[in-house]
Amino acid sequence: MKTAVEAHREIEAAAVPRQEVRLIRSMSPGQAVRQGDIYIHCVAGGHAHGPEAPTRQLALGETMGSRHLALAPCEVYVGTTLPEWCRPETFLGPLIVSKDRFVVGHPEHAHISLPGGAYQVTHQMDARSMDRVRD
Image (cartoon, rainbow, N blue to C red; front, top):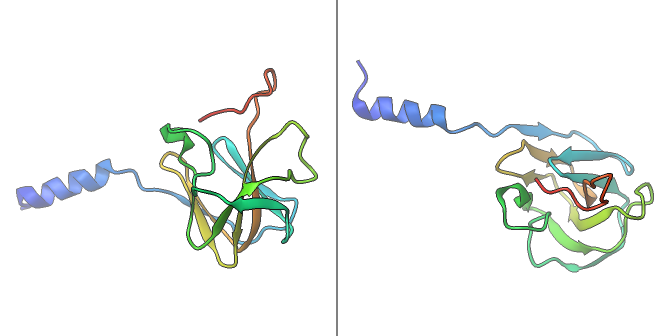
């Protein structure tokens, strides 16, 4: 027979969603993965960027849907240059650079584990208004 404490722990464990992690084994420049309303494009090392970003958050906003976070070990820089394969009106996000495998986390989407490299973030665009889509 279970104690009340054991039963309570089982209920809590069942109530907390388990966060899926998508393991991306390899990426080459030109390939991209999507997490909700952002695209993470693998770009060549030396991709142009601005200074270090003030935050590791990859999407603008304060809602739960904006909480795409680049988790250490990586550096996040202000994005300045779209990948050559993107349309000019694409909404540009930050650039992530890491020598080692790192994770892009989000409370509502699967986390993405990426190999070391350079990754330019862009945002999903609404086809009618050409505004950035927000989670």
